[in-house]
Image 1 (cartoon, protein in one colour):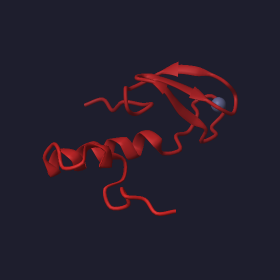
Image 2 (cartoon, rainbow, N blue to C red):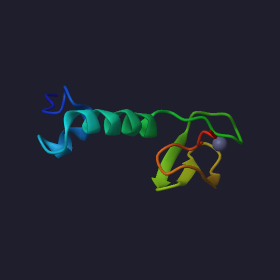
Image 3 (cartoon, rainbow, N blue to C red):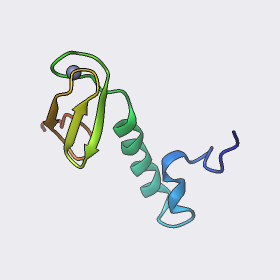
Image 4 (tube, rainbow, N blue to C red):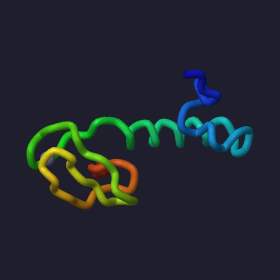
Length: 76
Ligand SMILES: [Zn+2]
């Protein structure tokens, strides 16, 4: 299927708005959000983002809190 956002991916919804650098940074994070994340409880890569900071495993059903865009946040 042809996609008009082939080149820019998830941030295609912003069109020409917002600077390129900023859009690329957002894309990097959004791509990670949709990546298969591993479940802490069963180890399967079935974690889906329910809403900001809430993650659910589609294999074992556990719901847990995490980062807004990533299930695990890095400590610096
Ligand atoms: Zn699980």
